[in-house]
Length: 413
Image (cartoon, rainbow, N blue to C red):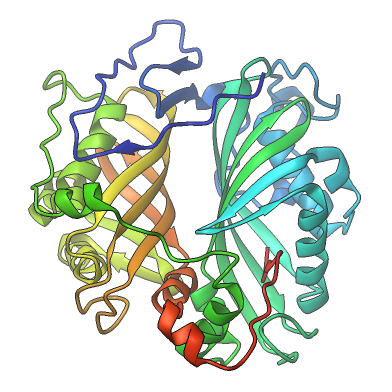
């Protein structure tokens, strides 16, 4: 049975109490959105080039029970690294048929695609536009087993040259670099569901295009495929209520509750003074558009700019995955999150539009000695701009041009 699809959690509530202490250091699940695993059970990627990873000495390769998987995969991180390399570097597109479910769902913000054929199509379109694409994997955070299903959160970076025409226009010949993060549910050698976040805004900039003008075109072509989110009375009423305060079960550090505190205090309640408490003094946040934000003051400014665009936005945690790195004070953590609200303020996304927007993101954290030392925060700014520039019903009626609904709309994978 595939790992149960997770219910999202509003981090303004107190949530469930979590206890990660487990003497035998095996995979553990407590709250329905927080998962635990031990990094010592696998060979973690840890910013190795995939070639170096593939050539780990055989005596150091860790074997995980992988019933239902092909025998060449030693553990779930090994599976992700090897299939990514084989598909993208070795151009074995056919491997997708063996490693993706025929009915897979891929989520890119509010745009969803379904079926293995769309994965094949998106991969081919990407390689046509960027035939020399080279991907570097930086981390794979994981949980689960071969019975309930594995989960992985894979953070990487791609370098490529735009040598072919694409959804974005004629080939430019320009070299680009873009970051991606992908969450996957996996069972019996196949990926059943994937959440893909890519810094498309940064890619558009590097191609020499105007992100706003391209967002307007993208909005017009997808207004039926992925219309704007709708807010009802419940959401409207909640906008006038202060976010609830999350209360941990004790004063003792526990990674699941620590992450809930970070998202409740800093994100949901906008108490940016807690950056100083939860981050190291010289912590680094690797932000969108390849920008490094360093130190408490800059990190506070980053959050203020983001939330100024959606000052009353609701913060939702969809999944928190924690990998223990030798002690209960040191962890690698992946968080998939959403911010849903009205674009009613001037901030990161420019002048307010009054549109309801959904910002979907994935963040990876390196937590050492009970504080965040490094973070990789990623969301797709182009997907947010697409929502901002979606035509309303009146605009659609006034526009005499027909719209082409691209049922795939893969862009770059």
